[in-house]
Amino acid sequence: MDVSFGICTYNAEDYILDALESIRYQIENYGEGHKVYLAISDDASTDHTTELVQKWFDRYKDLFAGGCQLIISDVNRGISHNFVALMKHIHTEYFKMFSGDDIISSHNIFDQIEKADPECMTFFFPIHFTEEGTYVTDRDLCNMFFYERHKHIHKKDLWLIEARKPFPSPEICIRRKYYSDGCFEFVEHFTMFEDDPSYYYILKNNEDMVLKICSDPMILYRKHSKSLSQGSVDTTSQIRFLDDLHKFRKYVMLKEKNIFVKCFLFLSVLVTFRMKHRFGMKSAWYWKVDNYLFRRREKYALKSADWESYVDNMKRMAEAENEHLLMIRERALKFRSEIGI
Image 1 (tube, rainbow, N blue to C red):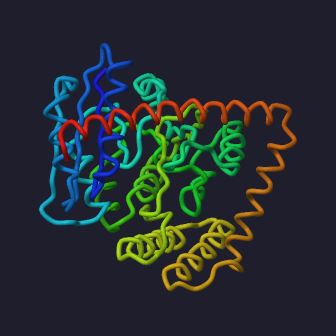
Image 2 (cartoon, rainbow, N blue to C red):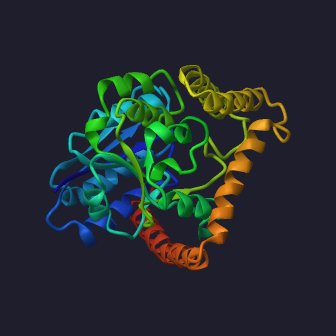
Image 3 (tube, rainbow, N blue to C red):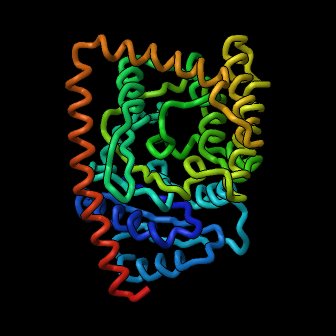
């Protein structure tokens, strides 16, 4: 099987070696019989990101029978344009793209990609991590438990992507064939926001696509203060991100035909407007409706006989991934000390 890995980077010198070492782990442990290609698109980093990548390529390029490539932009154009530049260098149907600050889990990603239904958008279980280690959130546990037990066709559940999807974007797996030129053109209407627009476009233009839930983790999702969706709105990039989010929510609201979903989207537009203008959000009706919908999912989970065992299993899995995380970090630190950067 031919498989591509793609990484978008910008000023990721503190994290990029973790991401690369997680790819090396996958190839060395599960890559036999697979032809692997790696593409990294850097959005004009001003730190040592590209230097670290090139040094790593020099040492481990033989792992990639399909080749490895570093694409460097002359000017910083934003996440959306960097994403499109990267995707245009992905030519295999089987692929996984992720951010330069995340890492691949210890699970066999080649099997995960191959076994994912080619006509589905597959969501894998989200495990987060910080400098302190890995963890799972109660909200993610409840959402995944609920949605895993229901079949979801986008005609019914597209609003999950439009308004407030209950799944972190790094955990989503789709075939390359769905990323059309039209999809790229739509994504490039935004600057700092590529994931929801691309998934929205794909679902809108593939009416029979099913949303499928898998209990295994695929990508470990880093949480840190520099994340656009997690940090404060004190930086230009985070303000641009909020502008994009508001623009996207407004666009899908205007396109929505279901009156109830349209009302919910209208509430979400009010929230993004208040966020970008730094107004308070605690009393927003959107959050009240969203929390009401979550409580319904939570009630379903708590009534299920296998809920407690499910939570225990997922938390044990997160603890196991913490050992993997520590090993990847150790490898990355060792490599960096050896090259002296």
